[in-house]
Length: 427
Image (cartoon, rainbow, N blue to C red):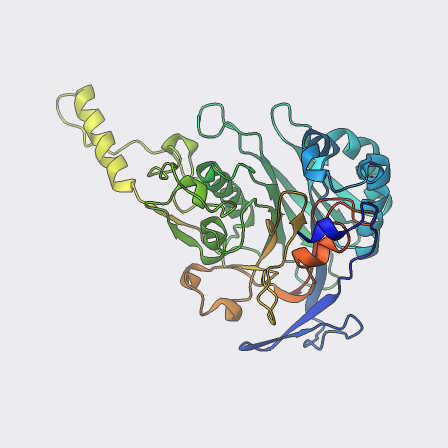
């Protein structure tokens, strides 16, 4: 391992640059690696440009509960009093219009994080995890860029659904760009941190379905379409996994899929049970299309004599049987800001790196412009307003990160890297 060659006190800075992406030609997406080059994208007055950061900032309580992951770090680097100024410095430096933060510890949020971000011109919304978990998700946005239309927290824990006994949460905001002399569109921004457990793909998929149902409800417009969506978070799933593919392709046939294969975090599925059909029970109130459904009793024609309970039960069973399907769907055309592999070498990008692993689990997904997704499967159901990706902050390889002693380190104070993207909304 490379880290064995590093001195314990090794310091250094990692270099990340802006990759500018221009869609002059759909078949040739141009990426300019030079941070000094401005994007040569078509420009017009009828546009709204904004930037989004997604960042798992590593809750101090979780750091201390999982200290075995950070044995490569010098102890002073792990203190919150050292880490928070570094995290704040990163946020100030990148100056994103929207922040989607995960692992935001409640006491630190109230005492330091929120006041510091408010002083930088952000409005902050926060959803703490349920149960006794002291951290949660925050979405913060610049007052100068957006007005807040609605706040929609999502709790994945359900007392009446045994499957959903975990305390993860999501948060969905509806934001209105502040645009003078223009019709005001809206943008839906979602943030989540799905369950970590690599062996519980059934819970991860159900949590994702619950988040998508809330997004569908919030982003739905009067004409039946959806406003543009940005969905950020730590999805605890790797690129190309069934969960990741479901987000991007809008469909997943999970028949015969082992629950430990859903997120792709571990290779062996020996001894694992197969996902049940359906994954979640009907009383969750979410369809296989990941939308809220109204619970309807089967329609039974009235006869002279009342139907017996047995007959009613039979009718119920028939209706349920018709609905059983191993196909999940959603109606968004979502693209990933990142491509997850370096084009020249095929080496994976990583978003998190500590003593046990270096992988990608963090994402920014967004509603792609219709012409950009025309050839993607499921595009026929994509009733989505599009965003254009202008630029992204480059990611790194595992080897890059071990040259600065992995994460956290002297300069980077989480075990995750911040993801950053610049978007354009055509008006």
